[in-house]
Each structure stands twice: as structure tokens, then as C-alpha cells.
Image (cartoon, rainbow, N blue to C red; front, top):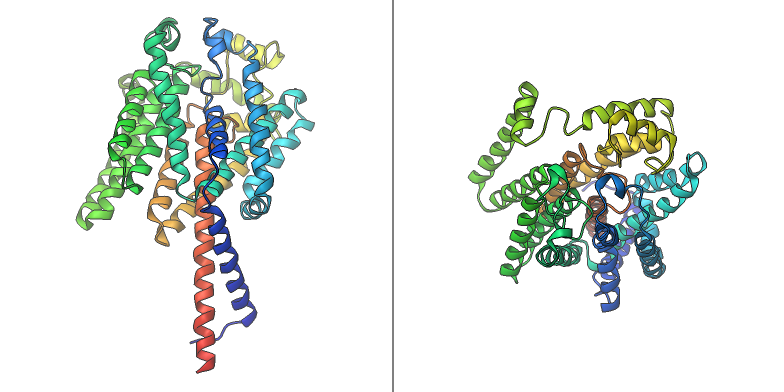
Length: 454
């Protein structure tokens, strides 16, 4: 046995002890009142029920952007107070989590600092507070409910929004089903648009598949929820959400095959690789035919033309952007210019990466790229260390979120459930990796001390 620095051994032992204390703190059962707070906060992050006052006004999609919804501000403020109160009792754990996730902290700092150069500082500071709330919810979920068991809390929140959405459509189909133009017949439930319902239910499918693999009881209830979520994705007619669900279910199937049979592992992995390559070839050689098969035109319903206009605005402020979520305000000159050129009222960039570049410039985009790379690396490390469900599903969710981000804002935005789940998974993978390294260092120190005695 080779000798090592005794100080390093003691530090490894201390780190292992600290991680064991953290694990004990994490596995404490939250009080019922805390569970209700998290349920409410997660429904706010899904943007469920909040837009019902606007839906009741029969406002069109173009009018929704200009309408003020005080219920949204009240919900965020109430969530921030409740989650802030819970954060105070877990301040030490949150501090340690922040030290281990410096990229996430830097992005938060950039969001807050963008108030100083924002074209609408009052809007940016309010939405920066909402982003801090989103990150607190993402961090506290694995802390209060366990590194893997926080998925059960997510599943409960999705079950509430899905069941109520289904009931809402049956009771008030004129509000729960879109009636406007080409979107007539698309379900939106208790959400503002069909895209919102589809994207939230796609994440719900991912969460339920993860819980099904881990849990041993209530399997009929879990399968029932999975069918309900998948049905709502189909009824929403959101093509992006449907493709994301296919990725999640295929990834879960490959994981099951990988765990049960060695021969089926290779078959499953090769099938996924061939499918992805085939999709790339089809979209590369015949993008028009492929988009037509998905019910889209070659401009992705006007998105490609919009992206050119957004790039023009990015070029005007390339380094720091226009301020966090400061664009797309009613009567704003820049928004009016894009509306006139695009031919419709634009609510967003319809692309996660363009939206970050527009809000926070190239600095924000670089930070987000580094975060994505770190997330992928953590997932791979978890798989290598034996935490296969957590690592594999983290990487799979990252792929699905990036794919959905090509047409929707799934990265770096507050009150977006994809961003909440992704950060919770990344934080959990980081804790698992640090715990495994500390345990390995602690075991080495024990072996070394035994060798010295002999």
C-alpha cells in the first residue's frame, strides 16, 4: 500500500462525516405543512391555475401578452415568503450546496445584476426575484424530501394539475379547449396555452417513469397517472411535447433492458442510436417533408423568421443583453418593431438559447453552456459510480430539455418546470458524486491506518 498525506486522510474522513450528517438531514420526513407549501410552490412553477382569470376573459393569444394578471404576482410573492421561511432553517445546507454549484450561483448573480443595464429595471428586478424562487424550490426539493424521493413530491403536483385539467375540460370545455383559429380543439386545461399543458405533462411523464422504476408499491396508480399524462400530451397536440415524451419513454425502456439483460442492453442502445441518426438524416436531407409529417411548415409556424429578427437585437447588445426578461413588454419600441416585422404579437423568442442571448448576452449564453456541460458530466459520473437511475435519467432529461428548448424557453427561466426539475437532478447528482468520493477517501484512510499499525 502506498503512503498518502495523513492530513488529506483526515480531511477525507471529516468530509465523509459531514456528508453522512447531510444525508441524515436530507432523509428527515418533512412536516405536512411543509409538503403543502411545496405542493403550492410547484403548481406555481408549473404556471397551473394562475392564468384562469385571463382564460375566463376569453382573451386571444395576442391579447394575453398585454393583459396584467395580479394573481401571478400574488402567487409568486406568497411562494417566496413560504419557501424563504423554509430556507432559513436549512441555510447551512443551502450554503454548502451553493459552494458546490458555482455556475448556478454565477448565473443567479448575472440575472440580478442585469437590473443595472436592463431597459426595464422594474420588470427585471421582479422577475429576478421569481428566478431566485425557482432556484430555491429546485434546491430545497432534494434537501427536504431526499435525493431521489423528491420525485414523489413532483409526481403529486403533476397529478393535481393533470386531474383538475381533465375535470376542467369536462366541466367548462369552452375554456379548457382552445377555440382560436387553427388551434381550435387543442386542450389547454388549467394552463394558458396548449404548449404549456403539453410541456408540463411531458415532464410529468418523465417523473412518473422514474418513480415507476424506483417504487415497489402503488404501481396501478402510477401506471394510471402515466396514461393520463400521455393522453393529455396527445390531446394538447403539441408536437414538441410529443417528441420529448418519446425520448423519455425510449430512454426509460433502454434503462430497464440494460438492468435486466446484457444482450438486450446492446439491442436497446443500438436501436436508440439508429433512431436518432435516422431522424438527423431525415431532417437534414428532407427537412420540409419531415416537418410536414409532424404538422409543421418549413418556418416552424413563423419561428425561423422570428429568430432572424431576434438575432438583429442580440447584435445590438451582444455582451450583456437587454436585461433579464425585460423584452416583450407592451408598448415597448423594440417589441413593437418585432411585432410589425413578424406580423403577429410575439410573446418570446421561441428558442431557449436565443432568449438567453437576448436577455443576458454572450456572457449568459457561455455560462449556460458551461452549466449544460457540467450537468452532463455529473450524470455520467453518477452512472460510473453505480447510481444508475439518477445518473441515466438526469442525462436523459437534459437531452429532452435541450430538444424542447429549440422551440420553447426551457433553460434559465423562472417559473418553468423543466428548469426546476433539471436543477434538482443536477444538484442531486453533485451530492451523490461528492458523497461517493468522500466515502472512498474515508475508506482509504482506514486501510492506511491499519497498514501503519501492522
